[in-house]
Each structure stands twice: as C-alpha cells, then as structure tokens.
Length: 159
Image (cartoon, rainbow, N blue to C red; front, side, top):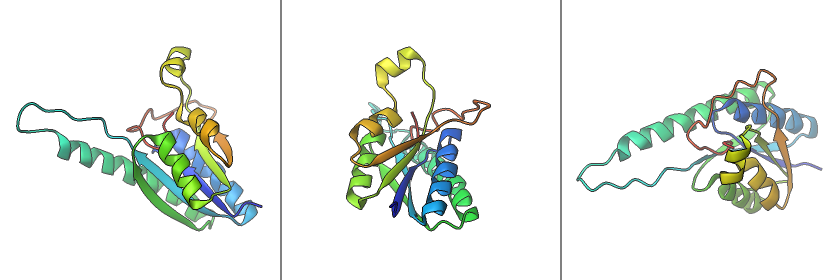
C-alpha cells in the first residue's frame, strides 16, 4: 500500500516527468505527496569584500519557485494532496534523508541522460538515490522528444 510519495523536482523536463508520474501513482493509490526541491549552492569564495551571494540566492529561489509551480500545477490538476519542501545540500543525500525522516513508501525522481564520461565522473542523482534509499524508487523517463531543460541549478531532480 502506498500512503506517501516523495517526488523530487528541479524545474527541468525530468522533474516535470517525475511530477506527472508521481501524480498518476498517487491518484491511483490515494497517496499524499511531498514535493522536494534541493538547492545545492556552489561554494562561493571571495578575496574581495563583495560576493555574488545575493544574485546566487535570487537565482536559487527563482529555480525553486519554478520547480514547485510546475509540480504544483500537475498535482493540483490530479487532485492529489501535496506539500512542498525546500532543502539545501547534496541532492541525493537530502532526498534520501527526507524520505527516511518522513517514512515515505516511494520516491519518484526524473531521469536525465548523461554521457558515459559524465556518469563515470559524477554519477547521477537518480542512481545515487536508488542505491541509498530504503524505500522503492521509481525513475521517470524523459519525454520522448528528449528535450531536457538541463541542470536547472542542481536541484533535486538533477541527474
């Protein structure tokens, strides 16, 4: 029985695919949804007195708002109850920790195609989540046209 589903989103087409698939599963099983977006800000080092921290913060907030707006529209259209949760940190680790903390039954995350070299060097968030999670993980494929918005700021669904 699926009671609670965590959907990881990042504002990309992979995140939207995860939201659509997660909404469908939640509607079929009557499950509630936790929508998670993870911001992973790069380390900012400045030897001068000024840093682009405000600009970076604005960008991360904009990406988070877009990711939540996209997912919320999909879930609202399916009449699926949901809550948005914003996290900061390593996406895979934060997703798994939140899923564990909440005792979710399923994590739905988007897939983003990487080259063999990229996969070797950094792995994918979806692969890391699948290996670390203690619950079921469902990886949503990209839309058939393969149009991905890219990394969208290293959010939760980034792979």
